[in-house]
Image (cartoon, rainbow, N blue to C red; front, top):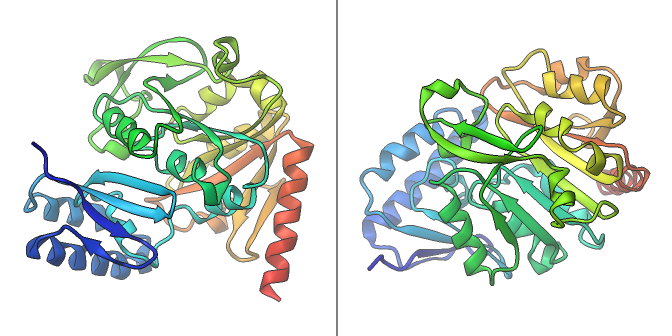
Length: 320
């Protein structure tokens, strides 16, 4: 039988159920995160994954808030930064999700990985929203399903990839946070089903008239995913896409700006605002690190545009 997971409370810092070596490893993981945070956590994942090899195979359950538990293999390089209580994962997404707690929306979590955002957005402090977590990987999906289960099965999970249309694709990669169907199909990997965002309407998973926040963490197929969501994105939806820091052409943002009716919005750390962008050169300044992703938003919805304007006004008042 597998050991019970280690328990960690982000609010209090309490670590329970860990042996001496696991506690020592936790200190190393936190220290590594704090030091590497000064240079965008460069090297942290590789070092944490090396440390993980010295640990027994066991999960850690992180209490994100009083109504949200997120479980993953202890020592995992990508997620262990959560042991550092001063670390915030994707600030700009949390800003929008927490501000939208009172809105009746559904999260469509594409490339959900282990389900972090679905766990959080479906929790009471974030408004207990409906969420659909979509993850194609046979390696990741059981961990996603487990996170749904330990949170009372309050969000739906689907094992498939998102693309421009229905079909199948080869999923490959070496890092669980970066599996992609964008690579060479002959390079191996696993065959996975693919659906388009608009197929969620066709299949009765969502209504065409609802409000949606759509996280597209789909590792290189963002543009295809946008093409497959024309009906959904014409309504009250916001897409939350990742622009990779190494892409100096800003391909995803360029496509949103030039090929869709959506407005492009980016978080500008200089102004602490979600800025509506008409000129891509702002991204040359914002994308300072080549090895991390930067979230950009796209929306054709007057409702969501007004919510973002109000959020900016609140942020400005807090800064005064």
